[in-house]
Length: 242
Image 1 (cartoon, rainbow, N blue to C red):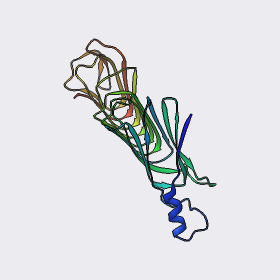
Image 2: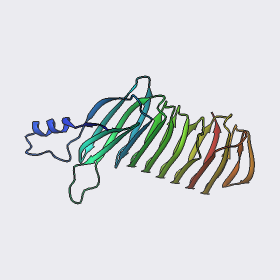
Image 3: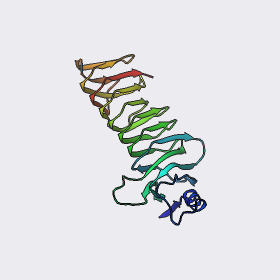
Image 4: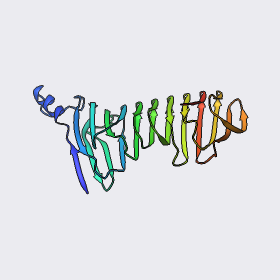
């Protein structure tokens, strides 16, 4: 096991310069560190609160920047086998909500899998070739220049994504928000899209529909294949072509 830990020194320096006897949990935290990506298959980030952006680049390294930290004791970066895990560690305190940090991450563009979880904040992934798993409780999810997805989930927020491949069954779901997916027209997939309050519309795709209705649609693209399930309780579902 190879363990790397990015200790947030900036907050400590700020606290000292302010003449504080101890580190205040309200001091903004900024951390910027780069880690080798040799042998990595999965990048996993778990963040209690805050937005997360992940961008692909040509370097065989992972850059993790934690910004605007509040109630954060540390950002832990750990590599076990082929997985790198980033955790936001709480400074503790009674009656406080969890720690907050905004992340800007860069990963090798070919990295096979990216998984991001945050509770309150948007998730954006751009220019990545791996399969994406993204979950937020309150916030939008936006994927651009991406290839495949596994799961995109939000309780309250819009979901916009580009999908060029499906290596597995995939779920796109939000309780309150619209969903807009732009699919590769050559994609082979089974589509199951449903909304409780809204409409399902398809544009620019040669979809062979088996069930149609104002708020539901099932059918196949191309030869069919892995299932892409799309759900929202309150919002429109739009399926379009890249």
